[in-house]
Length: 319
Image (tube, rainbow, N blue to C red; front, side):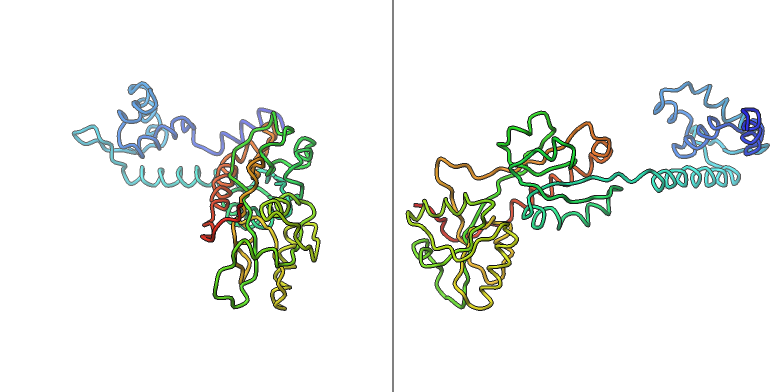
């Protein structure tokens, strides 16, 4: 099909003299109420706008507005019908554009526990408001290599990772820890001195918090079970507590606060050790990330709120 055929098809859609620019002027005046207001908003010449309206009325053979003494324009019956048609067309085209835009896939990477307790609960509501297909990928929060290699688009990482230099990033907050022990009907709160009497579930992929507790108590702790992730550790604790076994563990506060029948003691790391601060990092050159800046802002705000959950009021484990 050549250009002449295409022009013939286009001309057949609208009567002669009815152009897109004239219809746009008409709809703008209808919505603003006056030519003067449209001219002010668009920095346009009033005489040109009036001429466009006259030419549109001439092409259609009907009056579209009546003007009162204050230069306000009120649509005639024909004008109201035309405004309805144009408004439906404009809104319908927008809906088609949104519906047929390719859905961008974004991969969010984080540690297993961060994904399960911080990220995953936020995604259903975020995905409803953003046209993005979201996928999760497990990585260590101490390893930015998957982000650098392009295996994920957005990652939750430790702030002190030198590999994040050159990426866009936003600070989220501190990944704080607590000691979780079972209540088992105990009326009095446990004291830090009593923790040495518990057997512990240790998370092997992040042994530092367990080591902090040993430094605070100045004694090695009995390890009854070793798990690879905090998710496994929390499940092991719940299973042991159901059998009334006195197991304890050092867990991120966001995870420990979800455990049933748990008593929590916040754990302050040694002075020389900084509690991990989390950041959200992404490749700013990624097209999908650029298209969903609103998603990033909402994700940052939601993660900050999740990290600021109410802290236990028990005395902090420190010596």
